[in-house]
Length: 272
Image (cartoon, rainbow, N blue to C red; front, side):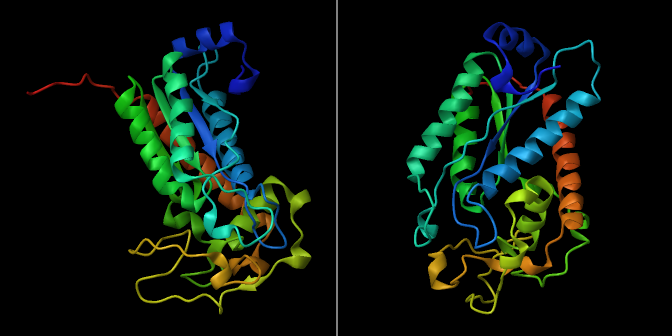
């Protein structure tokens, strides 16, 4: 059963939408992730988790039906102005990424897809992808949700964590590096993995951690706080941790895909 959007022909797309599959769009970015990780980290991780979850859903559905989920090719560029002091980063203006992702959703809705999930792999995408998901939901007959791979996980899924909280899971950290060791170990150089925590200016209300964010939204240029590009402790990363993280995120996302597919799309009512 085909479940990768780009591998389908147009007649196969027309047939696939009859099963009302959830279309899963991974969105990452191309940015520095320290000296030990590739620029593709954010879209590689998002794509891997999205694909794994869709494979899980399709693998346990009735095989005489069309796919219950389809995964799209990842969006590899996004908002990154705060990383531009490090070579390699590609930055897209905020309104452009909102419009771009919204256009993808509107195209899917035009072809008959009724439910979509944007799976995010880049922390600074959150506000823009939230807006894009809302625009798709408000301006088409479809519904669209947005979630990041780290936020779909439950607190219990991080029992393997060794780095301190908050701050150990920041950027190019124990979590991201471990996940990349599971997804693309050939692109990870653990000999160059740094621990960069002491130079980060944090406070009671401002700190960064993928496991749970602070109550204040704030992001400044990375170069003000790190000379490695890393926020957290990458030295603690292992493939075993990455496998546990991958498996947990895939399981949680697959559960959500099935839940979202069953969600009723009720008609609008105008009470003027």
